[in-house]
Length: 273
Image 1: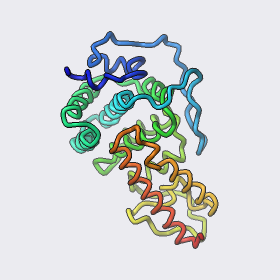
Image 2: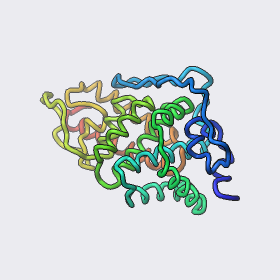
Image 3: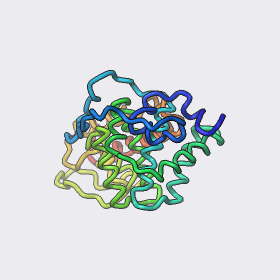
Image 4: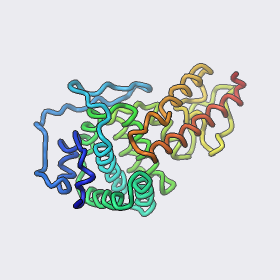
């Protein structure tokens, strides 16, 4: 097959709108735009709000081709955020593709990615298209992957932080989930409320703040800690991400272990039964 044909053999919703326009060269079609009637997506501001998708027919999670192409568009945006595509970022994405596709297909997707990094990406429109056509869990794990990409060089630049925060809002990912996600990927300086006398003063085995890993502050009650653990444990169940590929599933398993580690750290420090 020629370049890109196998990639887009099963493509559906991603072939139209802003994503379709960005990958139009590989689709071999005329660049497509919609009717201009898009409305600005609701930005999730409440700590644990999970906004509903736009009104209209809901298309579930889409095909693997849709999800892969959509993820590559967001990956390109993150890689461009700080003005330089770093080798650590390329390695991170390449390893993901090789583990989910055979070598030839992984190389072709890297070619698509290289083209995308040369194009202007309207994050607002792209995120809106993804949000409309995927469920919350899919978007959540997409952003988690992008957070790992930004952290692949062991740091977040201010521009990467700003872009990921913007994506968080446009994709409808709630703030509590974002805080937890960031804490698991980036072990920066810790801030927050330290007023609780029985707070966990230690870090997790990976050296991270256990409260931030669970999207909490040390002032959280024992019941809030238990509730947060149950909520994140469900989000990172491997069954939730099977449609995103084997590497995403492995990532979910790794993150689930960190959630368990954080919970056990807090339980031990507080004496929670």
